[in-house]
Length: 309
Image (cartoon, rainbow, N blue to C red; front, side, top):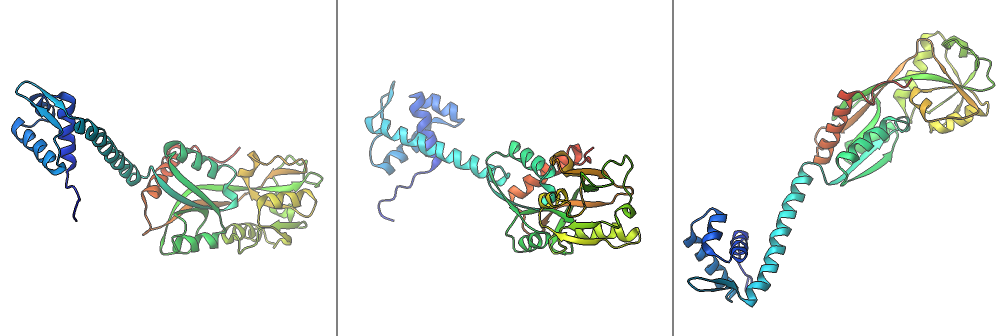
């Protein structure tokens, strides 16, 4: 293409060294090269540009006015390239870019905040996008690569997704403060709740969550009477406080919900669900890799895996 100047980055670095040293021999030593090739590269640069950048005598080297102007631009170009290289390396290492995380409502009380805060501390330049989705929506989004990772209740049925368990979540009974069992000091048995209406999340919202709850009652020999359904755990707590029924919810909400109209009671022979992260086996990104590294480090540390007390 006519008018395009063909200059190599190394020529700019050679020129900068000579301009700073104002001495070809010293510049050559600094660049760990012989002086004649360095002198030739500077000449080639001047020929390419079409103007002299240096005034040379046997004892003295100084920048021409054009050389002073060119030096400023050379600095900018080399610095910009160094920045581009550093940025590309950081993106490759998962330190920049975007990470889209799907999550279910049951992990918002302690697990999700701990993971996200830990990740942001290590990778403050990654833009994290959080999307609250049902289990079905998360699986679909993972399959379609609309999210990078999902934090959900497992198990799930998918041959394309990899699952890594984060922790087992125990359940507690949530009762209205006026409930006959509210002041009991004993753990509540499932049979104690058999005559009360229950408030649950719909199975289509969280099948593993729903099935674990129903199975708990079936093991005790009865099916619960479901009076209300609600998508959000906060809504369930509110409905319980109104006296609309009782509920079984993850114990992690104890630390974050302080509602005057309800009490939390331990269950006898309580059950658990598995909270896991899921990702598509063929959708790896540097940001996902760095996210999983943080999650695995936390897993080994155990700081978010211990059950609330």
